[in-house]
Image (cartoon, rainbow, N blue to C red; front, side, top):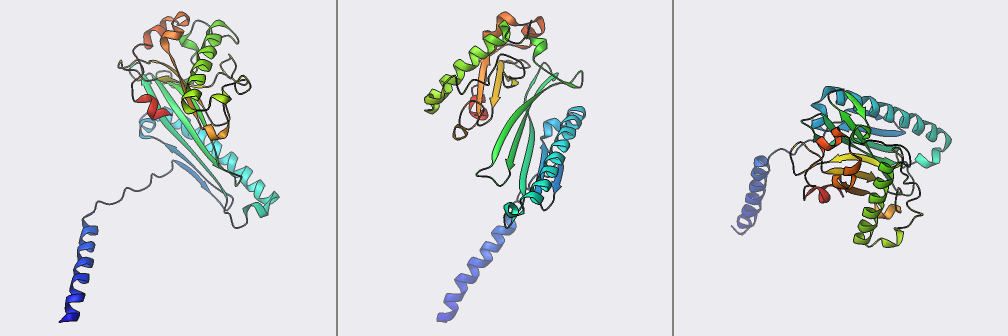
Length: 267
């Protein structure tokens, strides 16, 4: 009897645990990559979010770019393995991942801002990350720049000079908030230039007014405007700051304020 009393509770607990497991919902499967390469030298994947997949032209554009990216890195990893076999010994291969995700949709779906986030582990001291952006014109089915929204975008011209000034001011404030004010220096900002190619990766920020944009957000990966430890910076410039430089198209799509939760979502 004494043995029976000891065994019965254990048996009951096991049975209860088994029944509980049977009642649990199935664990969500990891998303499958939309493009992948896996060899002894590298595993590289590209993912498109569901909003991108809903636009076949945008999805095809991103996927074509992503496939070129993983093929290029696969070739480089293979060459590195031949040149430095000891680097790969007992450590596996390189690991690369690219994710395309929609940041905002403006003007009844016409302008789609896309974030392109990269993760890269080449067996160095630490992995690296990068961020870039795409501005997609769904009507024209092609990538565009912010040029149509401003009266002029000449290098060192009034628009981009005002834009850079606003970015630096916002960067200084954000660095101070993070306790990184000592890197708010001209030396860290020297690559940030008033040209479309050097001002930073840009997106149309969402707005409290449906279908509109509240301004521009500029996305800087680690090392771009601060040391690696500071991570990524996302800097917002409200449309009102750039109002004197807007074209009629720019004046039409910009309105409202940045949603309160957008800052936390993007930092």
